[in-house]
Image (cartoon, rainbow, N blue to C red):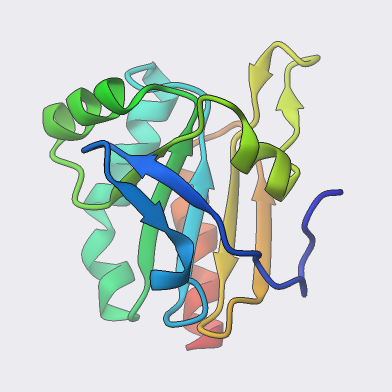
Length: 151
């Protein structure tokens, strides 16, 4: 069952780009959080999206929010992607699709590619916005708009 606006985000764990286990309870329910799911490291739109989050990262942290990117790529791929584009936020590897399934992220283009969905979660761990759109850059704008309303 897909998570929806108003739902609490359940605790989860996943490996980050350094191969370290990330526990969601260290962030979710403690501060506003933006979790964005994207199809693949180093593809054009995904790179534009990640770099847009990077370029606006200070705006997110000024609002007290954390940004987390999630895709099915390996920790090694995430590490290279993060270093290449100097990404200051956490990337989580979801190779087994547990997180996609937990959140209910749909596939796009007739099931051919993993979906691109952004979740804005308030400091209590409640989902306040779910934004599903194949365009990468608009996710940053929508996430910041919602954060400004809830902080």
